[in-house]
Image (cartoon, rainbow, N blue to C red; front, side, top):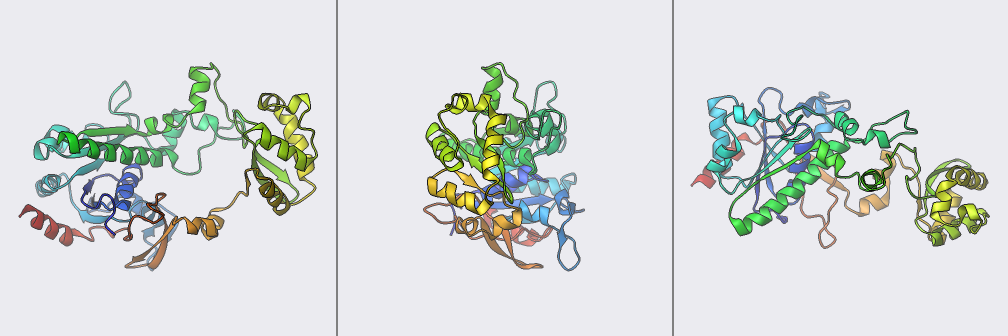
Length: 385
């Protein structure tokens, strides 16, 4: 199964997470992704753990998460031989991905102008921490720094006094997603213009780009959103609630759903303080207390069944192992099997897209450092003929 991007070649100069995630998304769609790594250690995420797996406990599960469907070649970009090889690969590629600090590629002799001189059709994805220009454009950035600087931590946690990072590296992952989306758009435009262009995004842009209603609360409403724990900033009741043996989540998006919940919990839905969402939100602490008094009478299984039967959105709070054991997760193709040369058959978190109900392609395991050097060189020589 070739995939939608089966005729696209991606030269991946990135490392860590944002760039590799973008390249992996393109690989999931069938692109040939050639991952360029430094001969001394490769992508730094190869050393990020625990956990490490394998007979020698030297394979990072972090690296496995972002590098399926790629070929690895080891190249020293600072050497004359390495630069010459990259230039040959650029001529045969459709996309180049990099997440160096601003100016690094220029110093390596691989400026945008030079890259487009080598290949005018090349689409370049460049990901930085805080943007390519502006007063802090050259500043380095990692995920948690960006979460704080872009306001996400101020929205996350039990209270404004205790800002929390999101548990996943969400700034990196969102930057990768936005980057891949930009690449596909630029490839589509190239069909009309015949020329590639530079797609730029950053960790700052990625997080700010998902502020959504938190952003307009300030830009239009003049209110600064703050962390509110496990309850929604605008809707009530919408959040995590305690019952007899733990917590469940209930999401009431309209008054019709509220009336169903109120009937289950023996609460008068028409009392003035609970009649509309505006009323319920104004009295949210009282509402939560009233609901939890009723929920304490039964366990989670009882309430999830009752809420499900009533058609009210509700759910458990699953641990990661429970998510991957859940048949619904597996039914959606969100786990993929690959045959790793050291680890044997392993399961990896899979791509979030399906086409006509099917996963777009079969998947290959994340590569060992430099594993495909000979194969890529043979392919390159054939292309150059």
